[in-house]
Image (cartoon, rainbow, N blue to C red):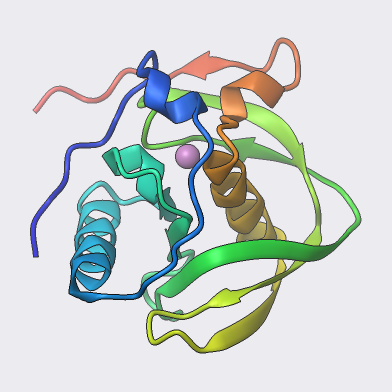
Length: 160
Ligand code: NI
């Protein structure tokens, strides 16, 4: 496994549409392992392949490091969404920027797991938010384009 470089705000790849995965091979497994390692290293709750410069429809999500397992979704599709929540959000590609966005309260997403098996996940609250955020990345959409006006905050990282 290896840490990958996270593409940052201003990188045009972030606005590109990712392509469906056609073959789950060793290279894809390596990408998934690296994405998980990179997400954990930066304490993220989710990461899309495009954020490490790979235009493939792959996302990883980990909303609760203590309790939940990492969710890996290949070619995810949101099948249903319900309700609205107005929530604080950030993104590893926009370090130190946080703002409020409106996300569905619940989403049902279907995709393949890393073994190629079809899985369906119902996510609520933070998980619904994370799924919506990561699937947006696959469509070239970033949270900063849908923030509620006047809610953008810059948080200066603490000096080490
Ligand atoms: Ni993001």
